[in-house]
Image 1 (tube, rainbow, N blue to C red):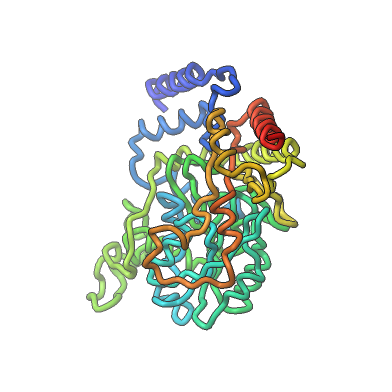
Image 2 (spheres, helix red, strand yellow):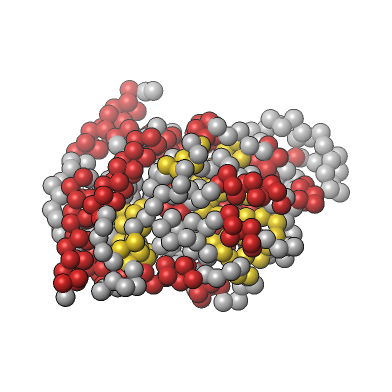
Length: 436
């Protein structure tokens, strides 16, 4: 490192300390956010250092992150991409590849998912010409069950893609056993659940593929970014191909002949020796990330455990503060799980003397930010009016979520003082409405 670069980075550390002085929390004035990134001076410096080195494409830092992230999960391969939404698109698209033979997904095949989820878990099904099969969830855990998915399996069902809702694991072991029993693919959408455990094992390690998001709201962030993980070298290569324009070659941009096939193979009807870097085996995309993002992600990865501990503490404090408050259905961890919570979800009971909107508007007026539980029921949104889908069973709990459910933040930027204020504000609101 040159003296000038070292001086610049020293000033970045100084700048961060100057800008990041913790202001006093003022109840009702200081916003209590639902989510957000938490950075320290080393992360700011890492981002600036990557910029000074003009690391504007996916290169060394991206490779380092992929290797470390895969090791973190005990998985063989991680493929970095530009968002969690793209990760879901790549995971599902990889399963349509001709290389998979009879196992591949074909247009018209069915993929089971939940209605009460985020749209980008479901959109890749539609984007690949497949048919979503929607199942309901349980209130309290907000996850679906193996029994619901089993009942939804039909003659055209070929895959399952389900998210761990707000960090709360679904029965991933049971779902994988069901998938293997019926010869189905399982994709775990782990975007909200990095650090969560099910049966003592990290979520995102049960399915054939799993996906992660590094959007600022999530457990660690790159600003934007996502990742696809798998233990299958075959699936990893397919994900990489779909991500990198559909190229057959797996050399990184700027690499020449690491695959040892550059001028020594013949594919399709191309002549022998046609440059492998310009041979395309998939109808792919360009969904790569940059080293700027990966440099930030590498520093955030060092803090996964601490971030998870803070999320668990904030969630547990809210759960204790609100226990027994009438009119509210409070969240529950899935049995045999240890969630790294993304948020604290509340359902207002139909019998309560107030509505979800009453409570949400009051919280917002007190500078406590709220969010709905994603789509509530995707089948009721205008984007899906013309989509060919099937519903297995009823979606009655998803409809309850549409009307009665919301969540508040537990991310590491929330202090004990903030959680105490949130709990007190909710208790006071409910007490006042109950008297009236």
